[in-house]
Length: 411
Ligand SMILES: NC(=O)c1ccc[n+]([C@@H]2O[C@H](COP(=O)([O-])OP(=O)(O)OC[C@H]3O[C@@H](n4cnc5c(N)ncnc54)[C@H](O)[C@@H]3O)[C@@H](O)[C@H]2O)c1
Image 1 (cartoon, rainbow, N blue to C red):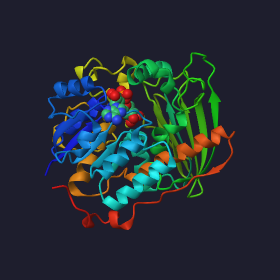
Image 2: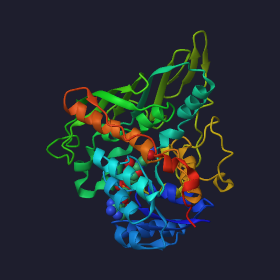
Image 3: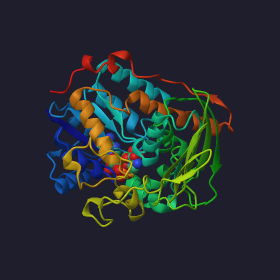
C-alpha cells in the first residue's frame, strides 16, 4: 500500500530525490515545504507533485503525511528529525544524521520507542568500491581487514561556493565554514558500510585555513571553525584501524571521484585513485576500474538539475556501475536520473521498502549513528590538538526492531 511523503527543504539536492520517490511504486502523494515558499512551489510545479505546506509544523500536523524526507541544511537535521518522529512520521534524512551526540541518542531512543522507520541517506553505502568490498569480504578474499581508509575529497572551489551562497543567502560565509569532520559520513560510511565493526577511539588533526577570504574564519563562522582539511585515525572495535580524510582545500578533481576507499586485508586489498581501482593479493594486481566505474545517468544540462551549481553536476548525474545488482530495483527506475555513483536508486528503494514492509533499512538509526558520531568526537579531538578520545557507541538496533514481524507496516 503506497505511503505518502512530505519533503522538508526544496533546495539543490531535494529535487533529485523527489523525482525518484515519485516514481517508486510504494510511494503515493508527495508534498513539499520550504522556509522559502517559492522553492517548494517551484519543485511541486516542476515534478507535478501533490502540493505544498506553508510550514514544517503544518506538514507534521497533517494526518495526510505518513513519512517525511529531510533535505534541509546539514547542521539542522537532528531537531527536525526529532520533531517528525514525535509527530509520528517515518523519516528519511539526508546526511549527516545530526551534529551532537545528544541529538543522535534522542533519535535512536525515539525510533526504539515509536517503532517508526528512520533511515539516513548515506550515498557511500552504495559507492561501487564499498559494494565491491562487501562482496570480497563475504567471499573471504580479504582475509582479515585490519586497515581501511575513506576520503571525501571535495575542494570548495568545485561548486561549494555557489552551493553555500544558494543555501545561506547574504550570510553564507557564516555557514560555509561548516567543520569538515562534522560531515564525516561519506568517508566513514564507505568504510563501515563494508566492515561489520565500529569506531571506539580517535585522534584527529585539523588544518587551519590560510586562504583569507573570510570563509574559514572563526570570527565569521557560526561554528567557530577555521579547519578546512582534517584527518582522523580511528581504532575499531575489531582491533583494526580506520583513517579518514575530509578535504575542502585540495588540488584534486572531485567531479571524477569525490569519495575514495582503500581496504587492506591479510590476504587481499583494494585501492582507489580518481580514475583507477585495483584489487591485489600477494601475487597479482587486477585492474577493476571498469567494474567500479559509474556511468552518467543523464546529461549535465538536464532541466532536472535546475539550481544545482555546474561544478556539482557530475556527482548528481553519475549512475550505476557494473558491480551494482539492479535486479532488486523497481522497473520504474530504468532510465531514471541517478546520482553519486548510482546510490540514489538504492537509497530510495531501501526507504520505500522499509516503510512499506515495516522492516529495518540497512542504514537505520543505529548504523547512521556509527557513521556520524565518530566524526563529532574526531572534531573534538582535532580541537584538542589530537588528544585521543573514546567514542561512545549507541549499539545495534534493539531486538524488538530486528524482528521485522513484530512491526506494523503502514497501511
Ligand atoms: N552525497 C550526499 O549524500 C549529499 C549531496 C548533497 C547534499 N546532501 C545533503 O542534502 C541536504 C540538502 O542539501 P542542499 O544542497 O539541497 O541544501 P540547500 O541549502 O540547497 O537546501 C536546503 C533547503 O532547506 C530549506 N529549509 C531549511 N530549514 C527548513 C525548515 N525548518 N523547514 C522547511 N525548509 C527548510 C531551506 O530554505 C533550503 O531551501 C544537506 O543536508 C546536505 O548535507 C547530501
